[in-house]
Length: 142
Ligand SMILES: [Zn+2]
Image 1 (cartoon, rainbow, N blue to C red):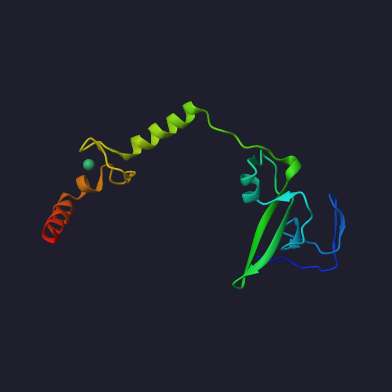
Image 2 (image 1 turned 180 degrees about the horizontal axis):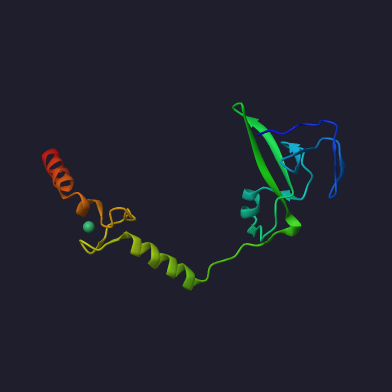
């Protein structure tokens, strides 16, 4: 939702008086391209290998795209911390966890996709008649 727009500028603690800013959703807000330097969007933050580290956004930019208001939250670069890098052991653990989610206990194989938790087994084991029909169609086409 767009808040009230006061085009007469905004007194901010961080950047003193900003003639092009207004307050919206509790944040100093600028139009696209008018925000002060030294602020990063989340994507710019990630591209620079930085993370919020608990820091809250300090401002935002808003613009219109196809009649919708779009906004990007902005963080102060000075408040950001280095992005955490997983250790090799953590990457191995994640790989094993994902492999466990791909493992069908009924046919005892890695099915190549994560099992649906509501089924608990792979699609072929959950719907054997469907799997048989698929094989028939494949054989007929060959
Ligand atoms: Zn299976």
